[in-house]
Length: 234
Image (cartoon, rainbow, N blue to C red; front, side, top):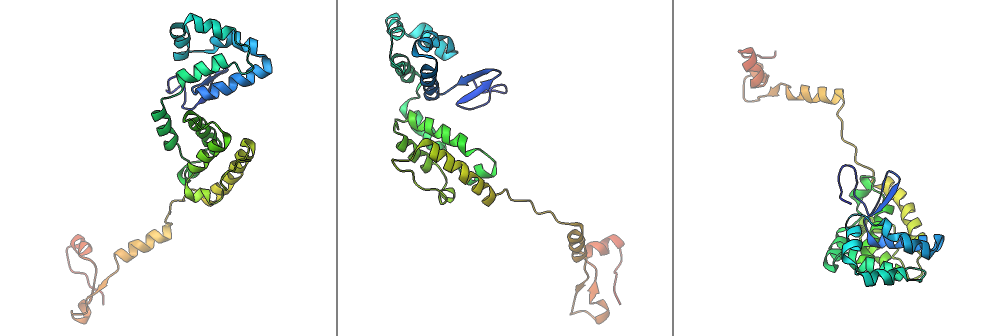
């Protein structure tokens, strides 16, 4: 689905009552979960009805009939015949996936802009998976590496035993700390007294020690020009 005024950016978006997946790995997770909850056969026989746009055209015009028959006979719990073909067709090219993964970061500027670290966490895992990082540990390392150094001082590097729920909870906990530490800078507003002082200082008579005593203190030239005569203070 194209990104426009009606359809915002994101790997998973909601349009009225429908959930639209732009990322094939996110769609894969939904397929597997639905197969476990509702039964693999029901999902297998109706999955082609969930395809829209380029995915619908792929199923209609690109998938050979022999492959469609193989997909419809698939009895695996995770519907491998479906999911593997979808990932093979709709995962980005490796060069594109690596570039998108490296460009996705989370910085202090994002904290000040009130961007969600959880949204970054989810998108980074999908980008890492598209690059071939299949294990949770390698995906968490990609999440950790994409966070700016100033923010990583409050984090620990994930280990082999780190779970997705534990690391997600850690990031959400640190997000509150980051927002307190890196609040948006407030603009400096000069009050009326400060403005008045600056105005008076700008027009304060200036000393001229080389002139006679009575002519030492005169107003600036711009005031003199306005009055069209020499003004002195006695």
